[in-house]
Length: 105
Image (cartoon, rainbow, N blue to C red; front, side):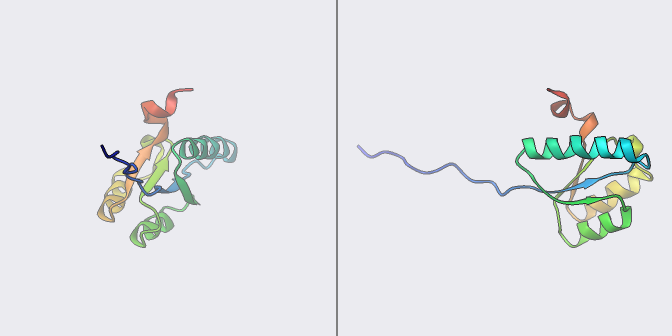
C-alpha cells in the first residue's frame, strides 16, 4: 500500500496596494491601519500604500500589484473610472469596509 504524499497547492501571495482616499489625516491613518491588518490577516503582501490615483493606475499598468484595497467605493473620487482602469490591467478592487469578511472581529 502506498501513501499519497502530495502537498497541497501553494497559492502565490497576493500583492496588494492600499489606496487611501481620505483628505482627513486622522481618518486616513485609521483606515490605513485597518486595511493593513486586513491584508496581514489574509497573508497578503502590501506592496504600496498610495494616495495618488494616477500613480495607482500607473502601478496597476506596471503589474506592481494584483489587488487594491480601499475603504469604501463611495469615498473614491471618480470610482467608476478607477474601477475600469484597474480592471483593464487585471487588478481587482476590494472595499474593505463594505466586505462582510472585514467586519468580523
